[in-house]
Amino acid sequence: MVVGFLIRTGVVIGAVYYTKKTGVWGSPEETEQLYNDIKDQLRPHVNRLERHLPFEVPSLPRTEEFSFLAKHYYNQSVKNTFHFIEMLPCYTGQLMKKAKDTFENFSQPPTSQ
Image 1: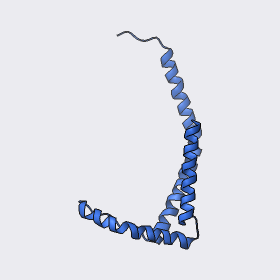
Image 2 (image 1 turned 180 degrees about the vertical axis):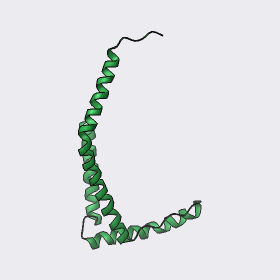
Image 3 (image 1 turned 135 degrees about the vertical axis):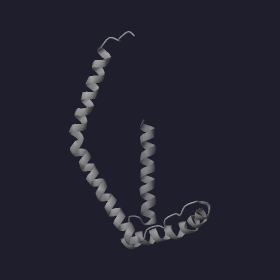
Image 4 (image 1 turned 90 degrees about the vertical axis):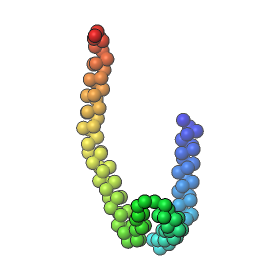
């Protein structure tokens, strides 16, 4: 358990270090340059893949679209998180009722058939 925690922590630290080093957490200009570099590096592979697939692969979004989508999905995740927190007492009540019903069923003697 401790070893697994240390491994996960190491992976997270490594991921944060690598993304910081590549410019993900830098200025907006650095991040945009990184995105464009990744898009340019992926384009030949996507072109080769498109020839083999029976459907068309959509192009990567432009920087403005990507920014909008990132903001949109971030906002959706925050809304969903707060919705979950709001519904947590209800979910807990349902879980407790199901647990009570299950234990009551276990306490009944088995019926013979």
